Image (cartoon, rainbow, N blue to C red):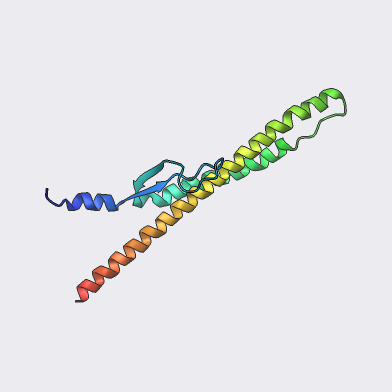
Length: 134
């Protein structure tokens, strides 16, 4: 089988990033999956995840209000309403925080992959420059 330089080039232009660990577990490393994409798209992907992170932070403020709702009055019906609303708000707040942690971990992995790409490209260029000088 002949060497296919195009296949090698295509392989080098792809980036694979593992999915972050599930925040509900204590194991480290990827969550069992991941994504492969073109290396020239990594900045756009990081931006999308960063935008999601900003939205989750806004949602967290709303969740915090929901989790700490106070009864509108002092009668029993208002007290019942507060008892039902607060657990739901707290569950939403907890889930939002787990999602924020997941997104932050994935952004960190994407950023590390981007840095690795830059380092590999710099090393390759240095090696080519060294061979040209010889």
